[in-house]
Each structure stands twice: as C-alpha cells, then as structure tokens.
Length: 402
Image (cartoon, rainbow, N blue to C red; front, side, top):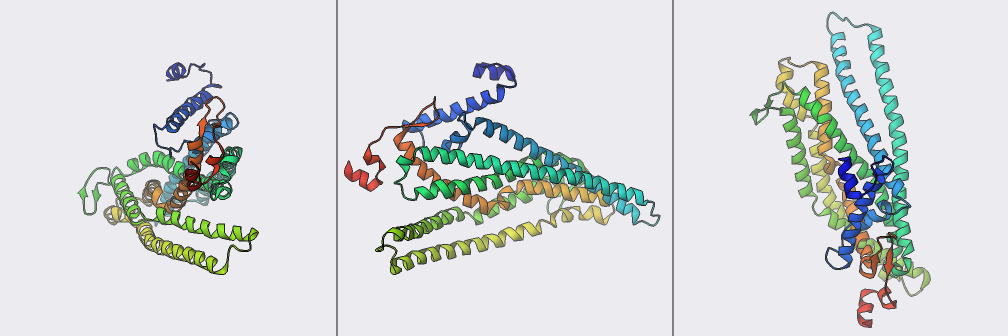
C-alpha cells in the first residue's frame, strides 16, 4: 500500500512526508474539480470551497490533517473506554445478583474493588473528553478562520453582495459550531458502531427469536438495525420540509435585519409600516416552522422513548425462563443502546442538520460569485480574478450594464 502511494505521489515513503503527501494528492483532486467547474464542465455548487481554504493551503494544512487525525484517535480511545465500562457493568451486576442471593457470598472488599475500577475508568474518560473537546473547539475555529481569511482576501468582489457581512461573520461562525457538534457526533457514532456491533453479536448468540418474526439468527443485531432504520426513514419523511422552511426563515430574517441596518443611516428607511410588514413575515415564518417541528417532535420523542423497551421485549422469553443473568442482561441492553444510538445519528441530530443545511445553502450561493468571476490558482491556492466594475454590481444592474 505504501509503495502504491509512493508511485502515485512520486514522493519518499518517509513517515514525515506521507501524511502531507496524501493531503496534497487529495487537494489536487479538489483543484481539478474546481477547474472543471470554472470552465463550465461541472456543477457550480460543488462543495470544494468548504475544504480548500483549510485543507489545501500551506498555512492550515498541518492544523487540518494532523488535527483530524488527533480527533479520530481521541474519539476512538473514548469508545474503547465505553467498551470497558460495558464489561464492568456486566461483571458488577452479576456481583449484585450474587450478593442478593440467599447465600450472600460477596465481601465488602469485592464491592469496593469494583467501585475503584469504575472510578479509574471514569476518571480517564473525563480527562480525555475534556481535552478532546477543548482541542476540537480550537480545530473548528481554525477552519472558520481559514474560511474567513478566504472571504476577506476577496472582499472587494463580495462586499456589494446582499448580506455579505452576515455570510462572512455569522454563517462561518455557525458553520464551525455546527460542524463541531455534528461532525463529532458522526465520528462517535461510526466508531461506536465498529466497537459495539461485534460485542452485540457475541452477547446475543443465545437469542434466536424476535417478536412477530419468530426464529432467526443474530436476533438482537437484526432488531437493532430494523428499529434504527424504521426511525431514520420514518422521521426523515416526517421532517422532509424542515430544511426548506429553515432556509426561508433565514431569508425573511435577513430582509428584516437589512431594512433596520439601512434605517441607521437613512431616516427615510425603516419606517414603521415597512418594519411591521417585514416583522409580520418573520412571525408567519416562525409559526409555520414551529408547527412543522411540533409534529416532528411528536414522532421523534415517541420513537426514542419507546426504544428503551425494545431490548426488554426481545429478551422477555429469556428473562421469564431465567436463561440470562443480570450482568449479561445489562451488557446486552447497554450494547443494544450503543449500536442503536449509532444507527440513529440522523434522528438525534436532525434539528442541527437542518440548520447546517440552511447555512450551507446560503454560503453556497454566496460562493458562486467567486466561482463566476475567478480562476483557481493551483500554485498559490488562491483565486485570480479578472473582473471590471460591472461584476461587482447586483445581477439586475449587471445585465442592464451589459
């Protein structure tokens, strides 16, 4: 594999150069996509603009690639500690079952040793979670800073676009915050799935029956996938209108804010009747959004809370016949919950994903001005512009000028 990468990149196989070489190769792919876009052979909304300022410039390449590697390693270690906790809960609940039996052959030292073992795992988890969260915040802020630098360097081209200041300041901030939350959650879900799915398979070898389905192999795993798929598809259908409504809501908010800004410098703007009309549009937009979120929340919370009962419903025959210990039951329920939450990534983050999609739409339209009036320099990683005064005008004025 190393030899193949060396041939493709024509660089040494030194561990020092390899990560940067891979990043360079990926950036060249982005730049080729960018070149096709600018020459009219591709979609002008290609999302390369989100990645290039941070991942494909020499100033941020070390932060971007080494940072994402460190976040991945830290998240994987967190998942490893969760696996240790799952094993601890199984052993501890078996100890409790033994202690509550008639013979009560459990000493105080055994209980204390289990408590101390959990305290050690939990302490390490807290330290790792705090440090990883601190670093992730700095990493996502650097991404925002790279996008901010990219836009401010080209401010003369962008400054006359409606809402340019909001795109550069507010939307890049929201993009960074939501990327931190959603990206961390997605990475955690993927790694949790990789770690806990084999555990669930191992623990459920004696579970061979599902309600309404009957005898089947790997019953717990199939039940988890079916339940998560049902919730993801169902809630996606229920909330399909939310991204568009959120985008429309941001548009009416921008129109209201724009009129108030004009009123700060011009006494003939932001008149009472105009402001009331604009705020009425904001009011209607929010009430429509609240109504759509209401029925989405009904479906979401009903699904999530009923999910607590699913593993017990599946294990009911084994519980009633005494074929499973308390510790084994606890490990199964925790592993089921971990795998279920991994599959429910979209369900649990849908509101933030809707918000992120609306921000992405606005930044995508904002970035089209750079796509239409600039050429991407492969050597400098910056745009080279060829424009006159008319390209700074709004589309209607530009068309009239032409």
